[in-house]
Image (cartoon, rainbow, N blue to C red):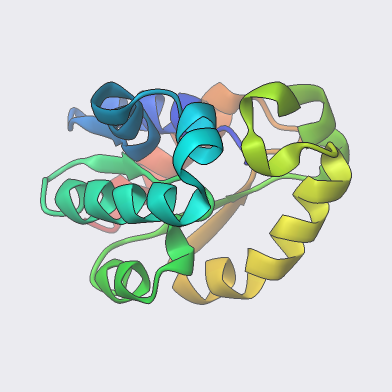
Length: 155
């Protein structure tokens, strides 16, 4: 959360001339605001919807941005094993300036929640990652250009 997945993903997709899919945006388009889904139907229902969105998106030739919790699903982990996975990391200090906790149901208590969630998920992220880029201090545009150049060299 707050690593710049959407901004970087969009830029990389433009550079590589492939579609960009943000699975959270697909969920919102079909089912309404994520905060509303969490509040009205709970996290398990959101995760079910997320799994459906991720599964469908991974079938398409595209740059796919997953929500940070999507990798908690074992089926998603299996699906990602067959894909190139770029892990974007960010420091707690940098993320504090980027995130709005009122739009993120799992961050009700701010960056303390972010750090706890990141620490819990980090082993999964690192296991699934093909390559990692840190987004803490370098401009988003430069990171996206580096990712695109790496992808072009590995396709």
